[in-house]
Image (cartoon, rainbow, N blue to C red; front, side, top):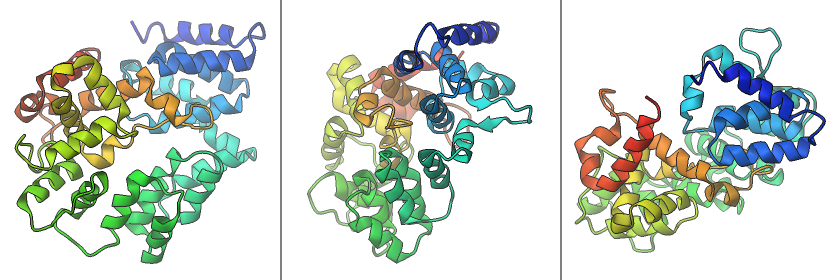
Length: 339
């Protein structure tokens, strides 16, 4: 049914973008629909605006295509040609042209910076350039590239730079300081709470495994002494607001366990901090974090996450069910929408 209605939705989008409604009004309406989780209406509207030359719609559409970590059932249902029709310029090529690429070619400085930021070459200046252009969340990838592949001088530069994402300081620290077992998780644990963390502590290493990689790694037991601090961070940090909102709204009897379950299902600390606005100059991060879209991204990522053997989803595994029955029920409700 979704596929059959695709062309009709595209026609509707063209009508919505007609001169009777201003492009700005239509863009606002499309953004509101997208933040509400309605891809079937929002994406065709954005596609029509992009085709009509709206730069904000072009950049937003291009970023949604490449940064949406929780693709909706609507997106998952599309054939490749339908997806290209939504997200790219139709130029009769096999793959179409990304609107971000087109905007960059036309001299759009932000588009050029966004394109450069996706390159795997470490460059601290990319982080600074994106911050100057108002796209702080887009610095995530180039910061990780500097941490992974940059020189020690580059890592030190970003650790000292006040525009570096605070949530990524543990990643820079982990790849800068003396090696430790499960050092990525230990760096995260030190970052989210004030108490000293010893690499000689089995309990700390157990929690570090969870923070580093999520479900299936480390110590998931309620008795781990570091678990309350991790749960407190999940319920109070800005980056994890969508998780806190989901758990407070739907799982009030087991809020802490619910938040911890989502941490494990999403892959640990370095994944739960990635619920980001695709384009902050159009959708501010604070607005995005408080939207249904952000909560859906959490649910959809958890719904689509699979075990290493790929035989079942993580939410179907016994360890997940033992963490929080309520959180798993929320995820399973979302999974049924993909059937």
